[in-house]
Amino acid sequence: MTARLATIGRIAALTAATAAMSWIVLAPAASAAPKPSAGTAVTASVPTPDVLREDKQTEETNTVAFTGIDAKTVARVSFGDGTETQTERGTCKVETAIAHPEWCAISFTHHYDAPGTYTITAIAARTTISKVVTITSKPVFWTPPAGWAQPAGWTVLWQRGATYHPCQEVTWFFDRTGEAADRTTMIDDVRTSLSMLSAETGLTFTEAAEPSTAMLTFAWGDLTGRGPNVAGVGGPQGIAKAGVVFSIHSAWTTNARGGVITNWYGRGSAGRVWLVVHEVMHGLGVGHVEDAGQVMHAQGGAMAFGSGDLDALHTMYRNNSCPVG
Image 1 (cartoon, one colour):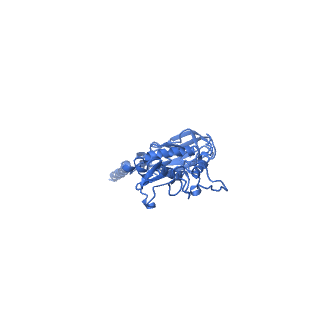
Image 2 (cartoon, helix red, strand yellow; image 1 turned 90 degrees about the vertical axis):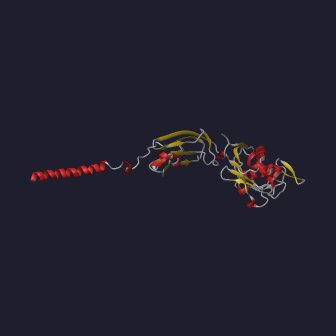
Image 3 (cartoon, one colour; image 1 turned 135 degrees about the vertical axis):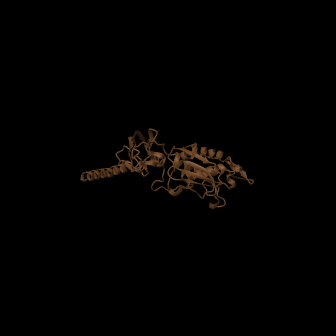
């Protein structure tokens, strides 16, 4: 009897142990923590082309970008000039980084202090990319020098100086959304005005296929809130960026005022090209003047460049040396 009870006790203990083991083995797999992506979704891109002009007006010149970075992954970038390696950990869940890597992006931007050849190294998980880049000399952007006396006939907008460097190629784009049927030839006057300004500045204006690559943008808008007679506004919009908005209500922006000079209500008046020139000059960094003989008079109306207008464009742009390299 005692032996039988002992046997029963051993069977009960074995059954309990088996049940416990079965509970561990049969735990649902879904409750396990997800495995790290181990870089399977990580991609990295480095600057192109191989030769870059280190231009502090172009914020994204030297940018390394990663996608697919999860919270278990650290991205590291060395820009090869002896500065500290930049690091950043992702914030996405692993599952999100795998399913939507574009949502889990990290970027590093760097500006070099001197021209030279540098090796950029980007590392994240199992992804490593190296790129050798050559940085050429920095262009010099005109700013009012110390002790500079403002000449008569023109002013510097906000005293910040030139928006672009001498000889720069300035890409532009005209967003024609909302353009009325009686204003469809405005783009022709934009092209004409930019050609005229190119001759006086040494800048090259190139039409862009999309706004994301444009350094100068044009658009239509309701400007009545700025005053009943405002036909356009323009000015710098950050580093190496400028924008112009034309009024959708002003008579000056209609096709009837197209061209360089028109005859409006029986008297000579500046054509629409001069409106474009005026606003783009704001974008270049030129301010208003009180001399009505200058294109940059606040009310407009001049039908040719004045001496002050030309002095501004030549001083800020054409008379300066082009960057080397």
